[in-house]
Amino acid sequence: MDSFLNVEITIIELMLLVSVVAMVAQRIRVPYTVVLVLVGLFLSFQSFLHLELTPEIILLIFLPPLIFEAALHIELGLFRRTFSAILLLAVPGVLLVTLIVAGLLTVTGMLDWKTALLFGSLIAATDPVAVVSLFKALGAPKPLATLVESESLLNDGTTIVVFNIILALLFSTQTHALQQGMGTILIGGVYEFLKVALGGVAIGLLFGIITDRLFSVLHDHLIETTLTTVVAYGSYILAEQFHLSGVLAVVAAGILIGARSTDSISPSSRTNLNNFWEYVAFLANSIVFILIGMQVEFAGLVEAALPIAVAVVAVLLARAVTVYGLSEVHRLGGGRLSRSYQHVLFWGGLRGAVSLALALSLNRTIPARGLLINMTFGVVLFTLLVQATTLSGLLNRLNLVGRSRASLAYEEKQGRLLATRSAYRRLSELVRSGILDPNAWEIVGKELSDREQQLAKELAGLAAENPDILARIVHSTRREALRTQRAAVMNLAREGLIGEGVAQKLYEEIAAEIENLPLRLTPKPPAEATATPEP
Image 1 (cartoon, rainbow, N blue to C red):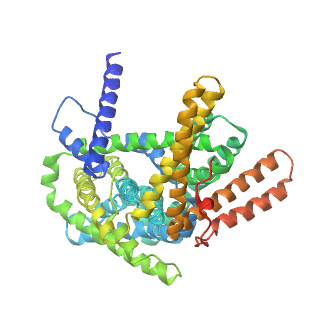
Image 2: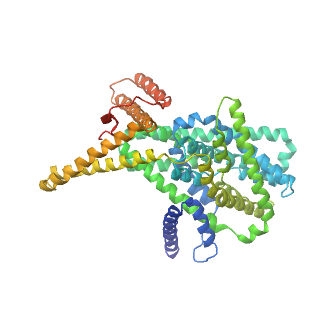
Image 3: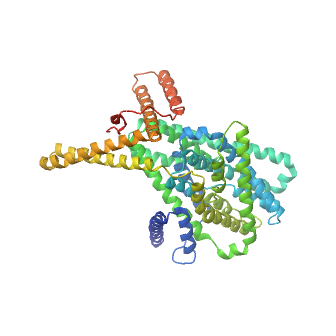
């Protein structure tokens, strides 16, 4: 009983600590993950709160919900448009980082070639948490955020697969594998990679399709949210049971559910779902980064200072070669990735929980295991404490953040207008139900009505004076209209008013129209046409 009580008290202490740290981070405008690591470093000197960070905690408890939440919010249209660049960075990119880091560590004499290859494979995973939270705070372009987050999701899966293959070939069965010859090893590695990666994606898609079908017949947000929790953990565990990629299974399931749930569940259920997963991701990220700081052993870091320094340089060089080199390959293939995006991808390639989980999972019989763990911690701390804290300056220098004053003014006025309308509707309901005094309503209702008209007029004028704002509003409205039509088609098919073949044809036509919807300026409309329509 006492042990359970101690665990409960520890969890409460961590949650309180997370809340305080998040508030402080907002005040000082530093990525909250960085502040959490610093707090964890401070806590490593005390004895009253102790939690051990194990690979099981990261990979089985925290990783599935973190990946699912990120995949759930990926916009499918942007993902498709940047998929070729994402795939280059997530597959060849991981292999390049692995080889370059291993080569540099071997040449400098820091590690033997097998151990260096193992370290290169585990350090290749990027962690977008600090970067994406910073993007949201600064208002970075959505395509850039999608590119960074999607690359990280896929390269997490690739990294884990490559790490396990290298570990199995060079350490678990190293004598037998080396006797087979390098060519056989490479062929076996490629086959294993394809099997693990594609198998994981297949399981994720299966979970996503089944869940989407269930959503179409359910109308309870609690059940729907529970099902997504089952998907996040269930797809991961099932894939791992078959020795497939659990990470890629969760990514595939999350992206599919995120894309299809706009039609299969109600807007209110979608809001509840997003709020739930946003909270879960916040809590999981917070605890993981505090634990990262708490696990640091300064004596080990000092002792491994030279290998850590070489590893940091090797990781930065490998990331630079990968991002700029593969971006050029992407350009030659007909794609385009702006130079400013490349700079952000390079400097924003932070390392985090996945790399640490892989390092901590190493068997104690692995040569130089302690050194590999210290090197991993050193690289992670450098990327979080140096790269993450300077990324906002890079974004500002590249003019990739911030919205115009007119855009912020429009958003502020729209918020006031919607709040005023909400108050008007609420008081109207109270009057109709006999709860509110009609005499009071006559006075307050007129005040709210006058304020609503004034705000609508100001909003319309602001939109008319700023064509770029108006273009985004019209584009968003058109997209919402098409999504509503798409949902209506599915409802008509479920009710039997149109056949499945017709419904599928209409659905695909509308989906294609949404995908190719252009962002274009429109003629200046009358003032009343630009005001936000009352819901």
